[in-house]
Figure 1: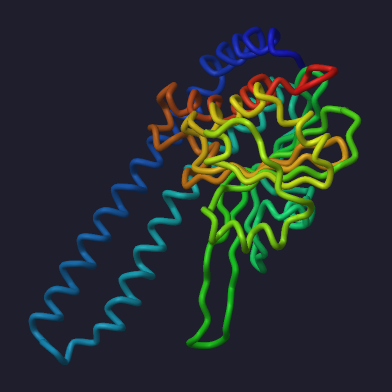
Figure 2: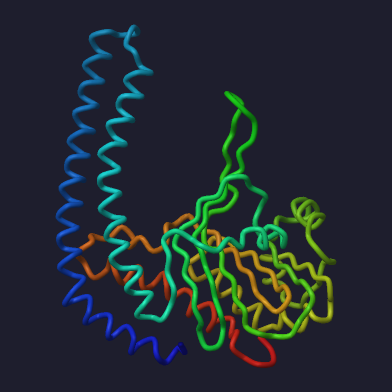
Length: 309
């Protein structure tokens, strides 16, 4: 699909939304509100009971059991709300992606995490949570993305710690260009941090002409000449624009064997509707906006040019 066809596709989806999807989402919103109301009432009841027990028993109150019991009850009712929201998402995402000519799976079938880790644009981890796999083609550029949360678990027993090392979108673009080197762009951690991250990154540090880009990224490459061919002034400005777009807190990327890998870190949950009521158009528009990020990246980075990026 090319960019010009996107509007026509979405016009067809708007008609489907009004005639087929909106009634389903209205019913789901009613169910969500009912489940949310039960969650609030259960929370109030648990808090009141906990207060009564603490006042009557004082320091002898079984605080740990109150906490565990309250958490179990809260989790039970919260899961009912989450289940409705998930059902709404699964009513929208497969159909919307099909309209746009993309492939979608809520349970990812492809795992490219090793490539991202080998290129040093995501940290080492031993727990992974992946969802919302989307793939397809945009103006002759094959793309793939997944939402991922990666966790590093260390220690055992009481000394066990969990640290989230990445949360956001992992994107892969194959734009069929002929380069064989590896060029990696990593977040600038200042001189001290860059010393350690650079030690585990392929290639040598590349000095570039753009001072703003240099403040945001550290570049390493196995081929200095090819790195400058890829990192044109236009590309660097587009990366800075993407970084300031609000979609991501930080970007790390790598050109490797004719492909571009990007790790877009973000605290938000993508493709969830942005917290809007399920029966409001903003719910679907928010999901469309998240999917359109792929159009923005391909267009903004100008990946479709045959010569330079």
